[in-house]
Length: 305
Image (cartoon, rainbow, N blue to C red):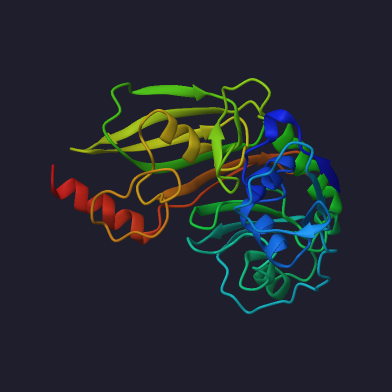
């Protein structure tokens, strides 16, 4: 790839400029490419802090992706339901859903390959059977397809927004309204490329996002809420709740670290999932109680009332 710096781009750091050209090119990844001499300025190696100038020629040489095979691993799984077409898995906090560059082991997919005889090939090598995902520190129910028929059907239901997905989360602050919704577009953060953000600026790539919330319990400085997703954007709940001033407890990416619950990662749990079975056509719904760690925080807050 080759770029010629225009007037409006001049003065930016080289790594920042690179990260803005493609959402797949994070600033950290750009810095690695620069350090390895794979990004040249006017055909010469440069450094991340270099301020690009008008008419500079930027050449990017991205190496081909490393080929690898996802290996089965004997990681314990909480399988809530299983038949010939699909599984419903209760994912624990801290478990990554599928392999990604730099994280090829210890994922839900590695565990599924060990425990399940067949997974849908539609998801590809990295995501066999995966229909949707949960963030690493979000616990709860996930759909997994064992057949291509199931994968196509469940993926379409998610795309058509007919899958019921209900979450429970603990947020900072006391919500005044008993229920409401957040309807704000979400896209890649214009500066911090590993983060998502509510996008209001014209010209920046974003997608519609809609989250409904309902208060379950109010505490002195916190609120327990139920959330319904009508769209499935990356980090949607975390971004939307932070946007309205109520970030999730434990969320180090989108909220300030407050309190002393000794929690690593956001307190967000996918407690209900409902869908139409791809083969039988019958509606199925499953429920998973909050994980112990989350219940303990709730009990602590209840004692302080």
